[in-house]
Length: 360
Image 1 (spheres, helix red, strand yellow):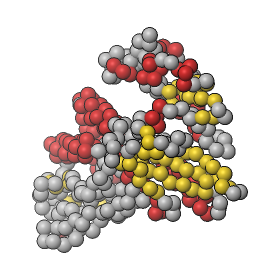
Image 2 (cartoon, rainbow, N blue to C red):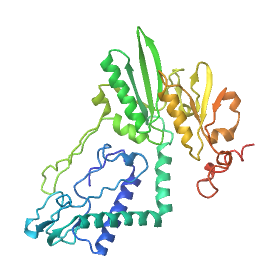
Image 3 (cartoon, one colour):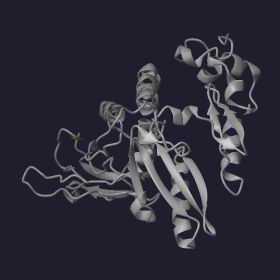
Image 4 (cartoon, rainbow, N blue to C red):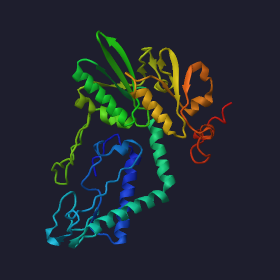
């Protein structure tokens, strides 16, 4: 139900609405009663709607409980309105009415198993539709930002005092756990390091970073009688306030860490990071390999400070001239055919197939 957090893509809202209505329709047609949609839970907090920012539709399905495994008896007159519907009356988002009676653990498992299989059926029968929806979401996510448009966020944290260092480190770790890529530099300031972090929102999970780093403004929702509608639970989720780290918005075109000159947002992905004056890159195939992720984890987590590197993707490989950009390229363990051919032609857009074979 409303409100939906502003950074949730419209395709996700369309997706979970479509899927939820389908599940309710099929369950009712199968003979299940007392089914409600668009009630109780909102889509405001990333703490509960994590998948919304990672290209996935979130469906929450709950079924009334009994007394653990002991059956209960509920009389019709014991039913009470609440949570956005009245169980005693049919409505647009509720029905058909359950007349009361015994409720067993078998009723619970039957209900939840049935709805799970309907979900799988819908996904299987509408596979291309769902994939196209997710493709549109990620295409928009990595779009280069225009001049004057929000391009990312920047913040600094220092290794002393210890309390501030802990908060800054936790903020960085929380973003990384959510799959957000960061750019960091550290400079010696007296007897401690000052860490500067930039988060470019033109990346697959940029909306997740934006939702956590910008200020939230929970909407003033009112009922038909003008009374305030209380929130389900969370009204704000700002990591900046929670960690005590000052986070500043950055607008395109922004200034680069090294050159302090105005640059295009695209250069953040193309400009190789320096590691002891070695131009260093890690190959990332569009045919995913687990070893690439583990190599990234080693480079970023297993040293006193994260190693800096550029993520070398297939389009850059096809463009050639790699010797001019890099001195060292790590190619993770992966079958040669997967690197050479990419995805099977027709399974993905053309740019994700036959990677090396098309290179001149």
